[in-house]
Amino acid sequence: MYSYLLEELSKAIGARLLVQFEYNGSIYVVEPHLVGHNHNHQDCLCAWLAERLKGADEKNRWHCFMLSDIRNLKLLDKRFSQHRPGYDPYDNSMSRIYYRI
Image 1 (cartoon, rainbow, N blue to C red):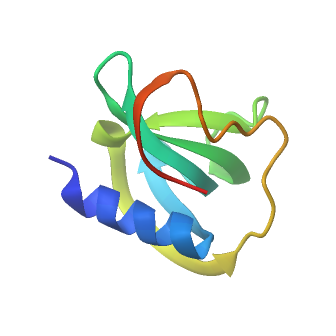
Image 2: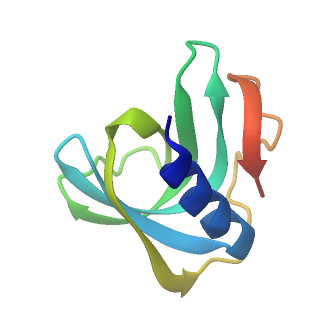
């Protein structure tokens, strides 16, 4: 259903590229770490907030974004190189993991 998003996010994760998108009225720039299917049967992206552009909540740097609500995804030329604190590549909130660092 979200094949374009899955394809683009898998590229970004593999190349460790920052991505930018609109989500619920805010613009985010994130370091994508994991894309999967959660226990609520929703496809989502787990990512580290790299930059607040417009209206994004910056208190918690880890965010889970529902793919159904992501709009105007752009892969950026900027790379990231490290795993962020608290990253779990076997995230137990996921019933299936599609792509991960």
